[in-house]
Length: 344
Picture 1: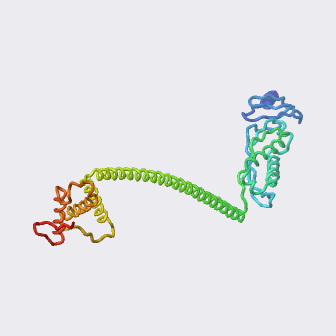
Picture 2: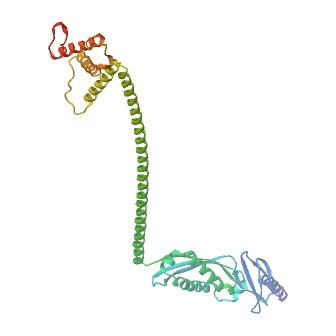
C-alpha cells in the first residue's frame, strides 16, 4: 500500500470521528450539559444536538424524569423520650440540569442526608401520640422544609411520605392497654347514659300513665255520679207515682210496690257470695199469700181511704182470704170452710 492510500484512509477515519463527535442524540427524558474547554456553556434537550468537535464535549447526562429516593430506617427520639424507628420515601424531579449537575456534587446522596436530618428534626419536636396521629402534618412539614432546601439545586421535591413508625415492643403493649382502658371507659359512659335515658323515659311514661289513669278515674266517677243521679231521679219519680196511687185509694199500686221489693230482696239474698242456705216459701201460693197479707195490713192501716168497703168484702177480701188459706197450708193448719179466722 502506497503512502497516498494510507493518507486517504486516515483522513476518512478522522472525518468519521469528527462527525460522530459533533452529532449527539439525547434520549427523551434526559438533558445533556455541554462544556467548552471544561466550562458549561449550554444544555442539549431530547433529540439531535450539535457540538463543536475537539473544543466542546458532553459534561453530564441528567435524568429529568421524576425519581424516587428511598430513605433508610433510622431511630428517632421524640420529645417525650420515646425511641421509634422511622423510614420514609421522597419523590423529586430535576427542573434545571445545569444546577443539578454543577451546584451539588452528588445529588442523591445530598437529598438522602438532607431528608434524614429533617425527619429527625421534625419528629423529634413532637410527642409520641402526636407522632402517631399527625402523620399528614409531618409529611407536609417535611415536604416544605426539604423542597425549600433543595431549590438551589434545580430540583423540585414533590412528595415526602413517612412509610412506617415502629415504637418499641413494650411501648406497643402499654399503648394497647391504654387503648383498651379508654374503650372500656367510653363503653361504661355510654352504658350509663343509656340507663339514664331509659330511666328518664320510663319516668315520663309512668307519669303519663298516671295522668291518663287519673283522667280515666275522674271521667268514670263523673259518669257514675251522673248514673246514680239519674237512678235516684227515676226511683224518686216511681216512689212519687206509687205515693200518688196510694193517696188516690189504689190498693193494686201498693201491692205491686211491695211485691217488687220483696222479689228484689230475695234476688239480693240469693246473689250474696257467702250465703249458703236460702229460706223460700214452699210453693208459689205462699209468696202470693205473703204479698196479700202485706197488702191486707196496708189496707187496714189506710182504712180511712175507702170507708164504705170493709176488709172482708169485695175482691180485696177474697184476696185476703186466699192469702190466709195459703199461709195456713204453708204452716200445715186449715180452718173449716178453707178460711183463716180473722181478728177484729
